Amino acid sequence: MKTRSLRSRLLLAGGLGMVLVSALATWWLGAMYERSAHAAMDQRLGNDLIAVLALVEADAQGGVQVRGELGDEHYRRVFSGAYWQVQDAQGRPLGQSRSLWDDTLAAPAALHTGPAQAFDTSGPLQQPLRVLAQQVTLPRAATPLRVMVATDRSQLDAQVSAFRQRTALALIVLIALWFAVLVTQVHYGLRPLAELGRIAEQVRNGEDVRFPQRGLVKEVAPLAGELNALLDHHGRMVLRARRSAEDLAHALKTPLTVLANEAEGAGSDWRQTVRGETARMQASIDRYLAVGVAADHQQRTPVGPVVTALCGLMQRVHTERALVFVFDPQAQGLFAGAREDLEEMLGNLLDNAGKWAAHRVEVKVAHIGNRMRIEVGDDGSGLPDEHLDSVLGRGVRLDQRAPGSGLGLAIVADIAESYGGTLVLRNGSPGLQATLTLPAG
Image 1 (cartoon, rainbow, N blue to C red):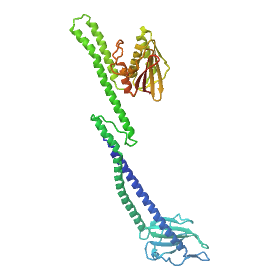
Image 2 (cartoon, rainbow, N blue to C red; image 1 turned 120 degrees about the vertical axis):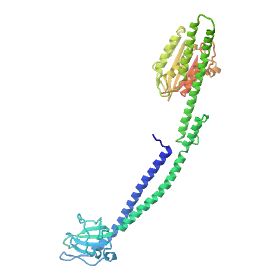
Image 3 (tube, rainbow, N blue to C red; image 1 turned 45 degrees about the horizontal axis):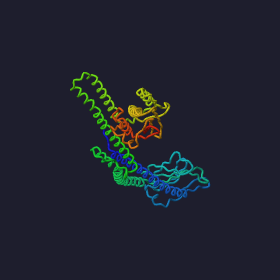
Image 4 (cartoon, rainbow, N blue to C red; image 1 turned 90 degrees about the horizontal axis):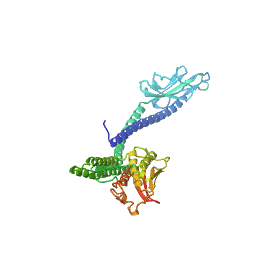
């Protein structure tokens, strides 16, 4: 399918619009000029019709006579194009101008007493005529009279045609000028988009640049902001994938070393070792697949069922310690993301809270505008304040006695950041409070 640039589409639409408007203007101006010229001609004919009526006299017996001629020389020259005539109601001539010679003007069939009627017809030499006709009844006259005056309109038609041509020519020149202005306007208006295209090319070439929002027109500035947000999101996804690959390599290093040592040794319990290390490697791979996948903002995940299921699971995991996981199943919450990501984040937070809780772990969910906040708190000893931020680092373990790789909280922070969210740790009364802020559906 052939595509056009935005510039060509704007120029095509603007050019067609100007042509259509100019054609309409040419027709409208010509029609207005023609109407005005006809009105002026009808006014002159009306004056001559009154002059002709002044020549008509009715005698005492009801007879009608036309005395004299109009003073205008055009009505005296034969076939000059200016004519008048007077007829009775039956069409019999009572008087006419010398310019008609032995010809007559055809009166309209529907001529009635009242205002004068204007119409077009042909003259003795087939020249186009403008005629004004009126039927009148004079005092003492026995029958109505039909009075008509006419003039050649060929000159008026030529003037109207010349006016239309000059108007069309003038508008063609204006179209050329308007199109030049349109080209300049489109070029100037698309400059911000051209600047965005240039920066996008730099981004594609690997340069670390961002789209500037200052100095852009207000219609384009939001687009630049969204593109910057998209670049930031892409950067987070790349960093997340890179960190996941590093985590996987680090997690597989120890099992591979154990298997290599087992292969070189002569131990008799190698099957159990292989099964154990294979399970560890499979768990690491599953975690990598879960963490390395990109954030899916299209999905919507109810929070309640996920938290309820995870709390039940953690209850069984920590059965020997008789921990209680508390969550209100009626709490409403909708996460704007994938269920797997929510399970990964909450699973790590609940598992971490379960390791350090004394008796109780509590989960709270709240909506704040278009964001949702999930709090996971335990009643353990908490953390020193100076370590609240550092514990989110990758591989950081403050207590080597507890099992784990030190990646759980870092994974939660990475996934939350990929959705534009945050993970904040603070000491409660007692225990540690982990607050997860995420986009709400």
